[in-house]
Length: 148
Image (cartoon, rainbow, N blue to C red):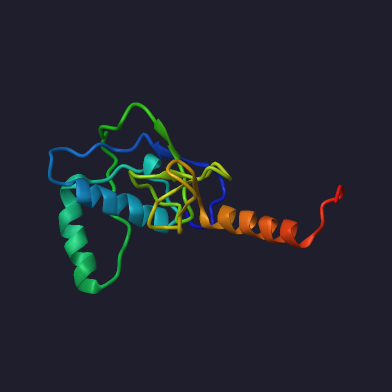
């Protein structure tokens, strides 16, 4: 995320297999991540949920992750692909609740991530904008105005 220059990230929840019951969500997430690391698309896989726990214990004991067991049986899948667009702000590129807008560059920043300078009760400038303003002021003070 630090090197991602776009203003939004699109998160997609694909049409993957639904878990049965409420206790295997971690195993399903591990199976998806493991298959992705092996170049497999989890949306095209049919996992044998009843063998997953035993398989995971075996992987831990052997200290080697292998693709989770598959089945040829029909499995329940999510019907829709959800897309969420998450805006990205600040220098850290991480989401948080509190932002301050720079009055100069109009960017949004976390107060802790950049040194925000208060130029009055309602005017706040980020470090980059404050430096630019100060450099411009110093340059103007050194250079004579045309009319003088």
